[in-house]
Length: 220
Image 1 (cartoon, helix red, strand yellow):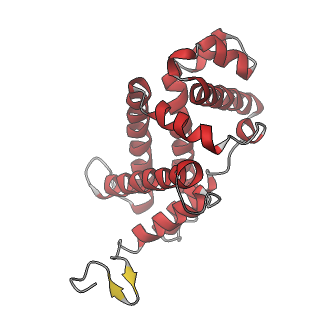
Image 2 (cartoon, rainbow, N blue to C red):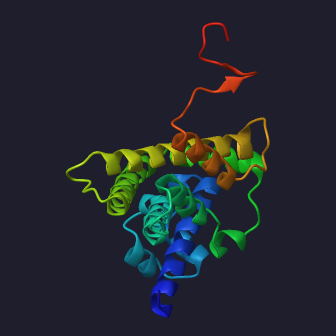
């Protein structure tokens, strides 16, 4: 990536994170495009060059990360096991960027409810679904290239991509529960949860075991 492309990616990420942070803190209807642009240090016109709406800015974080995951999968060694390659590609994109790390760590008590309220906003839900569909299609193409199958003609790449999406969603929900609103280890990272989720998928999702007995057994 050249300098110009890198600067554009940095601006896009800064705007997206500013949108998330302000909407979580204030609520969707109380944040203007002008507020987001000011927070990111750019003009409203620049915001409009990158995003069509506040909701699109929020959803772009997942979309951009997922597209990088697909490119990361394409770059993994050819002889690597598929699920190992997927896990490495996914985990590689989970480190927060400077637009996040340069800000104070969110307060657990206020961030969790605000995040839940943000994700319940209809406009954001719609944009998130649209972004997820685009991301899943691109991941299916990357999987298809790796295994030599056309996702248009064969279900396998799409099934893998949909499974990765599901694992990511479950791990993210679990992270939010631990980090912001529930009992357990609040410092367990999203990376750890994703590795755990994808490892279970790679193993075929065997039933959990307690003291050597499957919990699904009638006598468990």
